[in-house]
Image (cartoon, rainbow over all chains, first blue to last red; front, side):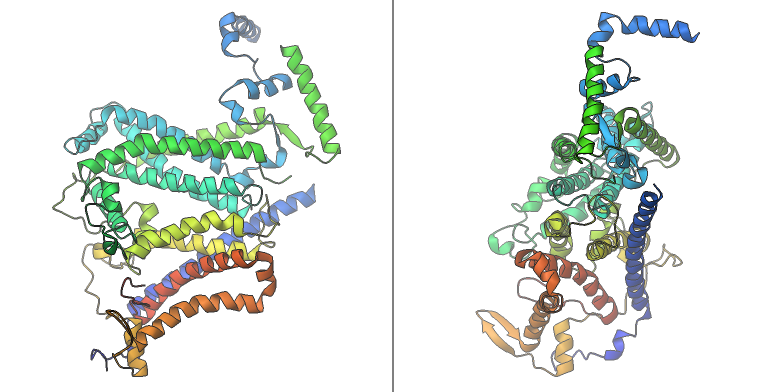
Length: 54
Length: 256
Length: 278
């Protein structure tokens, strides 16, 4: 079997250190994306409210 | 007291010298406010009237204007720094030290230059973000967006070339990181895919062109100095001229 | 001179009124002096004040003189390039330093030409341009997060340091053994090393060919799925714009995807070719 370097499925989850990094990366990117979108949505609403008030 | 001041003002403003310089009165009448936009070279960037909605700070956050302002500030502080700095690896570092110690206001100007540089990079990113979120790149303004992206790249390269000039450890190795990446360019870098196959070695690939040699040394310092102080600001000014011209011609996008 | 301008200004006012009545120019305009100029002045003063404050409070750094003999650990690029330097962990230098930044720049330039949506021009809008906003925000967020990580989470030897770790000590050498996707596949599927195809001196094993298929399949699926299920989207864009948009979008999503694959599944290279590795 190839180069004799057995691959163990267990290894994927055997390193919580890197799991933490991976989760941090995914979650923080998602949160920041939501932040940008929410900011734009808020500005949209605030301009619209102002137009309706006029 | 006010009347005396008024009289002095009018006396001065009536002289030939004054009128030869300022061909408009103080803009406190509508006529003068219109005239000043035509006659004053700094103000002629602006139209005479602007839509009320375009003034909203919540719309633009003044980001584009601030980026331009930071550029001017960098140019002014940069000229000051240029009086005291020589791009020679044997004395560059000591020149910077002199700026921080013996030269009057040297550290103030250096700090202003560095903070304005960071501020300009940040504000140009934020400006691009704002333009995207307000859809101000949509037709007919597509080309202005492209010019803006070019200006973004120019800003980053300007900042990066300036980074090398103090010739300290931070500078040298930060630029080395960048040049190692340049070596890895596909096709024209000696360490990139297909590069060696096409005959590129350390002495004739794109990194060599960038560094003026095989390592970050004297040629690199001189090259970066010329790029940072002369070539890139000129190119940036050219693109800024196009950028502002386009805004005046296409009109400022903004809420009515 | 002033009288002439006064009549011109008066003319201007009546001309604007007339044009507004014909819907050619919005009536609600104000003079730039003083309204806009005043805002510009205040913002310039404010910016100068902030910069002066920062200059006095936080001086520019100056480390030791440049020396070829000692390499600082870690060597960090300026903060706006730290995102790219962080990518170097997950991608080879030609990808992280050249191809991806070029794609970013090309992608940015392409935005106005692939955005067919006429709505949202000149005002903040999320509800009318959801795809554009999500896509752009995601790319932006990824860029900033990578910078963030490069500044605050990378220390000696470019190892990962949480804020509560001891930054002055080297992190223990990672016990993680990275493996390539094709080796993983070989293990799972029990394939042999022997090359299936040989072109000149280049040999391609079965597992290697499968990785080629996965790589192109990612893009292939990405191109065909919206084509099949979101036909409107495809029609509005047209063939060329659709392909450019999907290529850029898939590449952008591919970056965090490969990062996650490396972090969570310890896979180093997804595709190995005789000339480059992805």
